[in-house]
Image 1 (cartoon, helix red, strand yellow):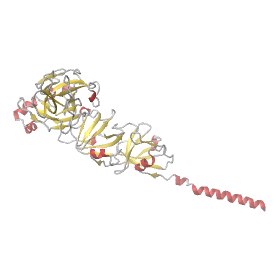
Image 2 (cartoon, rainbow, N blue to C red; image 1 turned 180 degrees about the vertical axis):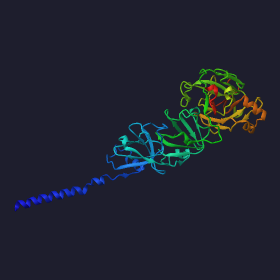
Image 3 (cartoon, rainbow, N blue to C red; image 1 turned 90 degrees about the vertical axis):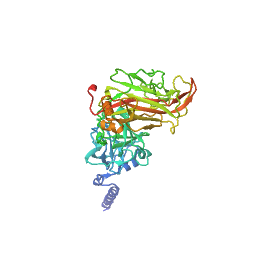
Image 4 (tube, helix red, strand yellow; image 1 turned 120 degrees about the horizontal axis):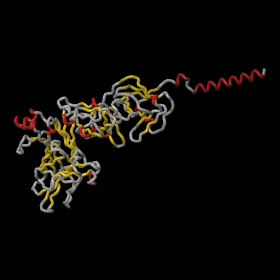
Length: 468
């Protein structure tokens, strides 16, 4: 009888232990219940904390706002946004992926890690952790560049819509690092070398621009997702080809205008049928990009630029300058012309020991207006608005559409002058820059802020025969 009692006690003890263990551990069915978390919570709870738990219950969902086919993002990354009002994050896969703009995805976070070295990136434990589950849409948030740069909202990795503005950089093409200016400020837009639309001409002006925000280190960018999301006005010519004169055929360090000031001069680069310019009071010099230490910050090494400015004895009071004219066969049929130029940091002229007064953006500015010559030097007509540049060391792309006959007459041409202009176009840029100093070396002399010209672009609706 004693043996029977002992056996029963052992059995009861084992039964109690088993019950206690099962009470603290969920059943296999409970472990499989998935739990969705927001991208905001993912970043808040796990950023910078190493590998996320191997617990496979947790996942995030969202809509892809980049496009693998457009290739304007690294081929092993895509950006997913958590609904119209939610946050977004860059997701990195182990190999190239195929997620397109508008794909709805489900991403298991188990085993992944969030790194935040230059921007927040969620690295997947394996490519199988991300799967397409359908399609969806994200409504881009309307924002100005000024609001974006203020950093008052978590704009990183979300889809935004910028208002009317224009691109600059890339010599008129989607290439390299562009700048978009909406009137409230400017922001960078990067074009990957592999981008499907790289090398195409960007529009003369933009109605609205939808892109994805990336903040890499201290640089804010709004990168293009698809070319179709850059909307241009219907009434502007569709430029498909741009001829760029970048002055690289000229020998660096030489003076192409001599030392004669305030004269109508001309120079030829290569064949006279390919490029001929006439200019008045601007003395242009060609210089290498590394020849001016103070300008190295914004000029490319071993590249030629035109340096221009005024040193003279005339009695101007506040500003001086002159026209830079373009008169070439290549202008026939052109619909657009642009100049890329900047105010130099250079504070003295060659052969003059004096230094210019300190640059003051309130009173020292460069005024640029595109002009047309109806056929005689006695009449010069403005083809666009005057642009005022009051900073140094930053290139500005000033673009003007070349009017048709009706537009030329509205600008001030007579009918016969318009016909003559269209058959033999004379287009130029009036460059008027503020005087910075008056010196007495070699007589009374006045000097202006030097102007750096990077390139002149001419755009066409169709590729000209001479360009084939």
